[in-house]
Each structure stands twice: as structure tokens, then as C-alpha cells.
Image (cartoon, rainbow over all chains, first blue to last red; front, side):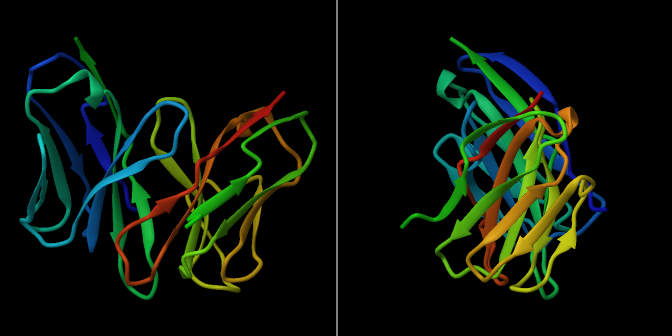
Amino acid sequence: TQLLEQSPQFLSIQEGENLTVYCNSSSVFSSLQWYRQEPGEGPVLLVTVVTGGEVKKLKRLTFQFGDARKDSSLHITAAQPGDTGLYLCAGATSGGYQKVTFGTGTKLQVIP
Amino acid sequence: NAGVTQTPKFQVLKTGQSMTLQCAQDMNHNSMYWYRQDPGMGLRLIYYSASEGTTDKGEVPNGYNVSRLNKREFSLRLESAAPSQTSVYFCASIWNSGNTIYFGEGSWLTVV
């Protein structure tokens, strides 16, 4: 079973602070996605990274895929209350079909 | 585009009752998935289907059965519901060569 562990599990910060969420595995993934989920809704894709060492930026969010494609990080600069939600990483493997494994989730609360 | 459509949105069952969650996608995706999400947690894979006519167990298959009726539809059946199956269920799909998972809006199931 491929496991993706996220840390921290919970994070409560003040508006304007920076934060980093980590997603780690002992398995190699062909791609890794980050999702944000708000209460009562399904996960919404933020970004997909596919190349080892890749860095993608989405406004105040910076995503990095580890060189060995086993880990990833999400950095938020100057967090805002609208960033509040559950952040999930998900790794996909290739090999005839796509089996997707989700991380354990990081619940972020940004306090105004 | 409808994307991934799940029904029903909400359901309350009594212990021992059976029901089927329906899922359909109109994106011609090969792979489809059923996940469950418990409060404050990430998604756990119940079953997946890499292509029409094939299904495989995920992390938590006990108490569930699935049918990949055709390329579009992937249903999840609870034969004898238990309170432990109270959860939010998400259907998802992906191309075999794609990297993005598309989720349905979720089905909230309560077993009393």
C-alpha cells in the first residue's frame, strides 16, 4: 500500500503569516496533485506537478515536487482567511492504469 | 460539461438496509474510483476500475461491492449497511495517461 503522509495535520495561523505543508511517501509517483476542499464540497484541484524538482506558483501558493518524486510541499505566503480549508495531496502511479493515493490531509485555519 | 455526476446527494439508511450509489462521467475516462472521506480526514480508496469490465479493491473494500456497467458508469453498492459506513462518498475519474482527477460532488450517507 502506498502511503502519503501530510504534516502538519492541523494548522491555525494569523492572517498574513506564511506556512508550509509537507507531503511525504516512500513511493515514487508519476505525478502529484494538490487539492483544497471546503466543508460540504468535493476536493478542487489546485495544481499538478509531474517532473522531479518542479516548482509551480499559483498566486501566493508555491508547490514543489521532490527531485526523487516521492515528496512535495505547498507554501502559502501571507495567508488569508479565504485560504482556510482542508489541503490534500494525491499521488498517481503509471503502469497501465492510474492508481491514485491521497494524503491524510492538512486542515488549515487562517484567523483574521 | 457535466463532468462526474453522483446520485443520491444525501441518504439515510437503517442498519442492514442496502443501497447503490450511482456515478457517471461524460469525459470518456478509462479509470474510475470510489473514495470515502470521514470527518477531518483524507480520502480512502474503496474500489477502482482501470477500464470497462475490470474492478479492483482499494484500501477499504470490506462491506462494499462495485460494478463497472460500461465506460461511463461505476456504481457502489452497500449490501447490508452498518453505522461504520456513515461517511461522505466521492466518485472520481481520470484518463489512463492523464494526471488530473475529476471528482463528483459527493454523497452524504448516514447509517442509523
